[in-house]
Length: 191
Image 1 (cartoon, helix red, strand yellow):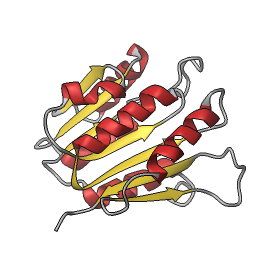
Image 2: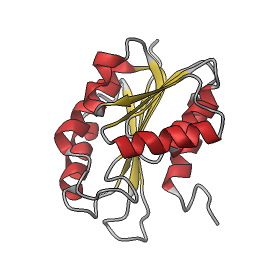
Image 3: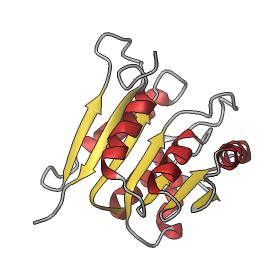
Image 4: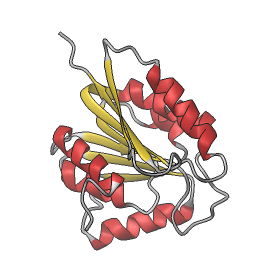
């Protein structure tokens, strides 16, 4: 059975759905197969805006096809660029950003997210995030380069100012230390 206790992506959706509302702006920092983009598009509805980033044509095509099949392309911008460029493309505040690190399932496993660009993307997401907004980062570390990326992300988020940010880690304690997990960053409301 697929539920939030067995599927990390469903858990990420559950958390984002608590924050994101129709009309909001959201970012899928790693469009991949399009499932997060579709979720975000359905959540913000046609009155919102979703920016979906990926460096692979295959990923953007899969995402476009999924959106079209679900009549959810309105309000979605598919952007062939790395998430480290989001601030140069997006000019307003966003309420949610979703990262799904690693590689495209079914794609070229040589094309992976990398610590340098991932950290730049997370920093930009922090700058773009509105008060009361959420960032989810699903981290896979079993592949080549994954451990280094995991450690870099953890170091960055562990040092965020706790007066401004709440940072949580959702992981399975009874699975391999290489099992995927989620980091959640919530920007506190000021005042």
